[in-house]
Length: 180
Image 1 (cartoon, rainbow, N blue to C red):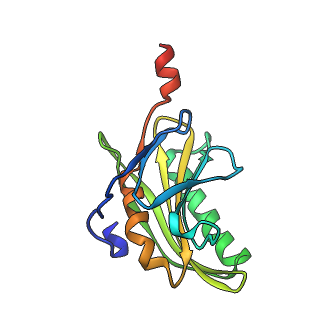
Image 2: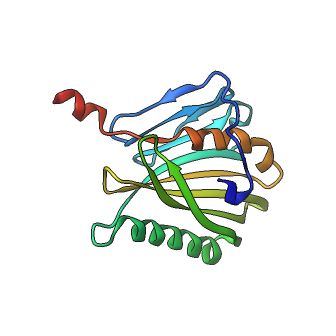
């Protein structure tokens, strides 16, 4: 994380644990943030309570399929490259500001992912997005963590978004473990 200039773990206050079965991860939702609804499978969306209905700040975690034909590192790099290409070619005023490695401390191991900071416009509003591609070594999936906010709100909500990212840890399928 230091590569992007944000240091230290922010305070979570009274955090709520989020660990849905079959998602392959757990994370903590900081005080003042709530889970929102999404129709996308294996996707979790969190927003600050004060932005409900406004939608200008959110953290989303999406499970992307990982290629079985290439290694875990190459698969993450391919997903990040596709994201960067889509931002620069399909998003209005899209630009990648920085793309650097991300060191994911999973508790019992460390793996390398990729992080990208990008800007774009949505409905005439300048937006900023921090996307982190995290390989799940225990499954054929990449956890894509994204913090998106209007450019004016990005720094304000960043500490809570960073706390969610810092709390994100892989887990094995709890439902399957219970059956064994």
